[in-house]
Image 1 (tube, rainbow, N blue to C red):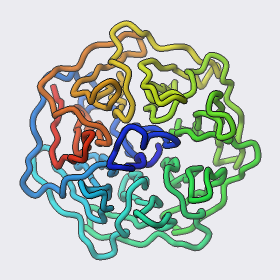
Image 2 (cartoon, helix red, strand yellow):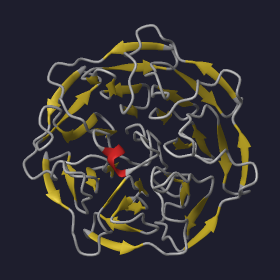
Image 3 (cartoon, rainbow, N blue to C red):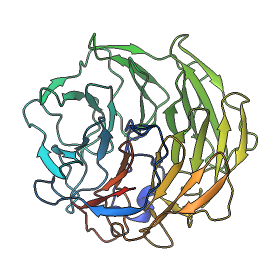
Length: 382
């Protein structure tokens, strides 16, 4: 998934122009099933402890490790980039700080992926520079290790990052010169980069997600934002295959994207005129065909919301459109139907993060129009 969006004039709506979409923010790898294997029905919001939490921020990254949520980077209310983070443990409702020794420099618009043992942070930007470096955090040892710069992709922000099970894929994004159409694969065991083929790659300003065998990338064309394109990248063959866009959702930025195990689901975002949309589509990997999501019961049109996959449903929460929303809904692919999420959660916000924690959704951080950022969040559980 893609790095968090550009917070110009501290997260005003026009900051979304030319930016990529949101998801479970920024490369988070969420647990897709519960410990029991039974579906979890969200019922109650519980506030997250303030004590020990990281400084309030938005446009940060968050990943779920299987035990903890790891938060890193982002921007504060003064639009300064941050280079610290925290680890949240839901069973005890407690926070711990990430170490500063060896941590990546302050940044926003970066990505973070969870490998099963480490969180890899890479890329992004400061207020004046585009970054092409990163580091790996191991929560078991509570230490950071550098990511090699040899053979690394050119510096970029707004890029796509995905974990394949053995490598981190970095693709696309932009630098000060505009959109990039290249990428690389990073092997953390070897601490080594391998270039990705660009032959046949889609020239889109979109988002992407790992589908179990290929990287799915889709979005508006760089050359014409009123049209869409996409592709599937196979690391085994280092090759791209085109995605049929017949029946695909209308062109949009700042949309969410999840993978169900059989389909890629896109929802919400901003159209080329920066108007929020409230529809979406599902791409069937087996047939290569798109079909629309049901409109009845869907959340209000919005962008910079979050979406998590629970193992059985997609949950949408927060974001902004006609207003900043403190609501959401869950969508079932089996019935193509929406169910409203319980109220009583965090204040409406966007540029926040959300992760699926086995049987609960954790929402944290974010901002409102006008500059306020949050150091608060809540857990939606059964």
